[in-house]
Length: 228
Image (cartoon, rainbow, N blue to C red; front, side, top):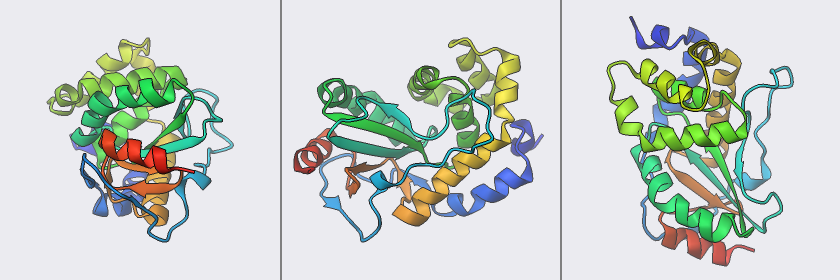
């Protein structure tokens, strides 16, 4: 059975992904220090991801937001669920960022998907099966156990098992996995990142609309301090 049939993806979804996957890569940036870059394109912070008007109320669409909506500094991360550098960021840098800046009201953090492959599309779709809190729980588990489910011979079953941990039944999982509107939504999110903001790898971070080089805490803290 081919991968796209196994995950219930039609040719339309795969066709939409093709342009994104041609240039996408994991680990485009360094994890250490880095200067901010404007690159002459519109600040990512000024563009909201459009949510389809006709979608069901269930599921998490658009930005995954952490922290105070009115925080003075906004960080946008474009990341892949299958990218080991993104998992490393979530495991090593994000807890410190959350404790020092997000939980204290200094930073609003926004997660946006940037698709790398079909398995990434599957995992990203599953991560958005529930409400915002459920999505955050799923993302945490998916990153913590990335090597296990991504390297499995039966990744669909591994993803279903992870979904069960947050209360999503296999029936709900299967229905969610086949949500073509979500496939299109996530693909469009990735296409906007690539075409408007020249995102070519993951993770890519913008601080108040300015892209920074690297995703280590030193680079992030410097960008936050410099943000206006």
